[in-house]
Length: 386
Image (tube, rainbow, N blue to C red; front, side, top):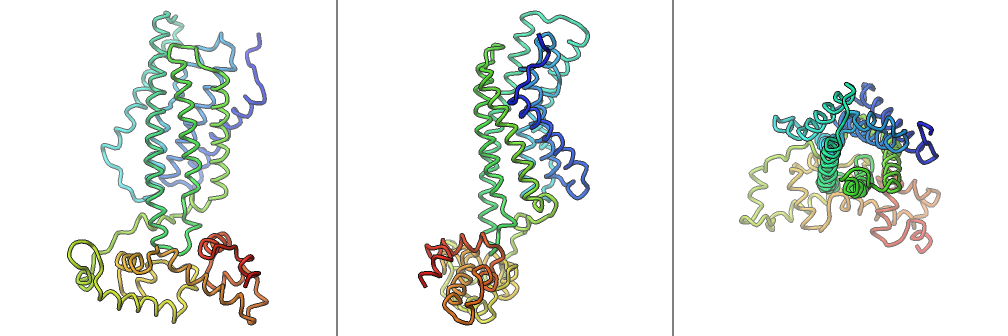
């Protein structure tokens, strides 16, 4: 009987494991990438790769060496939720200060590693397992996996909520968010939830040792490899998110209200007084007369400097008066200018992208999505109808 039973499916899974290990090594050894969020991303990739590798070897390796594979103290599933948690935390807030009780997140991992290491040494000494010991060992291992699955689903749900808050902050502070958005992570996190769900099913089926569905296990492992491939693809496409500190929104401290701004509020319900109309008119005049919206790098801080009002107060005015966030407010000016220039003979030699850039749009994708959102038509459709 051959020692290995390899197939195309197995090779795809093993290559995914290899890529995960290589990506983790790149993140840890490349100086410009070596920041805290990337270190936890490397830890996540390392954990996923080893999970994939050991699980696949359990299936394809001859059963005469099965105990050695199973007792390797590298099958550390409880590192996965911890690495996801701190990856997102440091990604959104690079200046997060580590607290003493953060070490408690690693307790399940330490217990799991200690248990597996003990049995690994026990096996290397050539000691034979009794049937009762094997059953107990499997029950503990599957308990660790069940805890990791539940924790991973909970952590991912928390991470998605954090990303939603981060994205909301972006739209409240920037007129261009494409190079700052983390929404691409949502697909990875949702895939993580689905894989955790299937893994939990496998764990329940295997709780009494050896009754798991190998086909379901292999396809789940293949899904895990695809996830590793996609993370690698995202690392290349979103390289700027990994090597530059662009998460300015999460790092900003909300400035205290000035005495003038405080007086502008009525009571304690947070509504703005009628005096705020003066500020609102002045804000619109500054934007329109100076064509401030044409600045591709325009954000709430720049507008704050121009108006002498704090970011928070400006946001309140725009939200109440325009019923819009900063992103829609500024891009509304840009769309209107593009619409005007479409029918202006002086701009007939401009391409649609040229018109968009003249109006302040930085990216084509943002221009297309915002234009259709505000007019109900694509730029080319609108131009034809105009």
